[in-house]
Image (tube, rainbow, N blue to C red):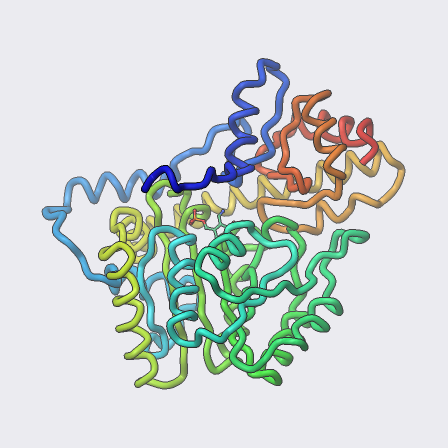
Length: 394
Ligand code: PMP
């Protein structure tokens, strides 16, 4: 049996990480994998997480199973974080999942279960796991235009024109904030135009929100998601705690299915538990419990929010520094988009040849589509990157 297996194409980002590690140059810079790093290149454990873990170690007296949908307190805390304090929890069916990826996977399974004819519309480009999981599950998928390669901003007219081709019941996958891989985000009026179109065509939004707090702030980054939920009859949301709580390996995420109808909510809740059972039974609890403790405790929550704000401001500062440096070196405002983009990534618009040249000549590692992890920079490496970009002819 096993001899029938076909070789798998390796994950490009993980291959890039391996190449970076093997590079002997001590001037090398890793702008590849999407993990937050501080100025020393370290991915720290957040202070509030350490405190919560300490308390958990002292207080937790059993490791028995929780529930198929995870701890309802976690779901409620996450619903309030993403949807706002005043959220009517009667409208929110939710289940804990292994990370945001698990939430996306379970969301796709839910779509296939509820409406096998639905096409899922994804942005071009998007996080590669989206099309990969959709194709693995055999779910019909189409792309909508999203990124304007010229301005490095969004292509809202192209996006709306493409989504006009969607049929009623189709699902539109949207990044709630901090678009990965481009860093380009819709403005509030543009979100409204997308909502109007989804309403007119009977489409269902599925929001992937993996970077709340990394862009304009915790509340600001959730604003578009909240507007969608308020105006659409039904919304799916996959939220990840990997980045904003810094608990990548704990695999902590939540899938929410929101509807206005109590009977629909009950069936959706039962289906989320059923789908968890089919895939892995009980979702991981450790990270979810830490997140719940932090969100429910005023002191821990304040400490977490302030550290997250430090992280956000650090990335914004690096963006501004890089944009300024590029302006100085090129005598043009062509690279101002770096300061306008939000989140951990920017697609800077280098060709694959230029990306390769940056790696060979300068030991600067970025993903082949020229996605740069801003958090991989520091005040001292920004000028190095800027000079290399100019030299590579970007
Ligand atoms: N969605 C997007 C757009 C992401 O970039 C990520 C993280 N790379 C995720 C979801 C989920 O990540 P995780 O499974 O680690 O929570």
